[in-house]
Length: 370
Ligand SMILES: Cc1cc2nc3c(=O)[nH]c(=O)nc-3n(C[C@H](O)[C@H](O)[C@H](O)COP(=O)(O)O)c2cc1C
Image (cartoon, rainbow, N blue to C red; front, top):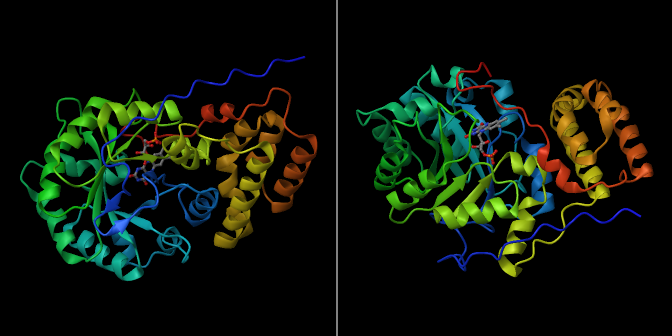
């Protein structure tokens, strides 16, 4: 007889001032303080709707979109902006190194129906930074970035938020300064990834750095971000930083039940179950069907090749099955795989916490071509 895996100890939820009230981003009341962080290549409409189905997410954000491409009507960019009435509230994340484009793009996105406009000031990758967008905006010492953000705020009626990193490198932790100035010019909330641009995705998240951003502002919410993959991580983030909410990216890919569990944990001290094996299979099929509806069968197969490691790890489906997804070229192969896995049931010793290790590709370094 195999013994059941030990149940990890769940910390008591912290008593946080103000957390008995909903989180508001200016006039937008969120149903939960846990938001989906943008993950380029993943946080498209099919994935956002699949996450919303599971429940507990307060706000979803699109992949970052280049305002130049929006203004040029690029068909790929329009796909990234695909939405539906149930996909609410939703933030559209924009970036640009060109002030006029950023302002015009924000107006366009507002007219298109975004609940919130989020400006990316954290992206470390070369193709974004070299044009003066993403994390490069955190290097400005002339006031141009603050001036630009204030112009975007003035150009639209919807709340404008900013997502940024702690700074360019450890010697230039400019996030508290920018957060304070952004609040002054009317930015409605800040999401702060607790790493510098130099760190890329390496090292650990600097919780004290996030705290310094929380302390730099007076009223606007600060949403902490980085490496939250469990209740324990969330607990640590909340206690150490005093943030008003948490944005979760890779943790939600590994465990789409995360938002629901975090809300239950806060309300009752118990997170409740993650998805069962069958629910994980259902999630995958629904996500796949939505991806077909979004971009057609072939593109859905290509998209799911990228997801193979993540899904197979969380299901402990093994290398041979992963290979089927890596080579996916027709929907039926995925449906057959799911039917087989469903019939076999979870492999002995299957614990869904395995999915926490799911390997999600990140840029190799701050200057990676990506
Ligand atoms: C594959 C991938 C794509 C990302 N794309 C974006 C993006 O489009 N916009 C953005 O602001 N951050 C992006 N990020 C950063 C995440 O939003 C988040 O800040 C980071 O992954 C840390 O949070 P996590 O540990 O919860 O994933 C991306 C991260 C990854 C791994």
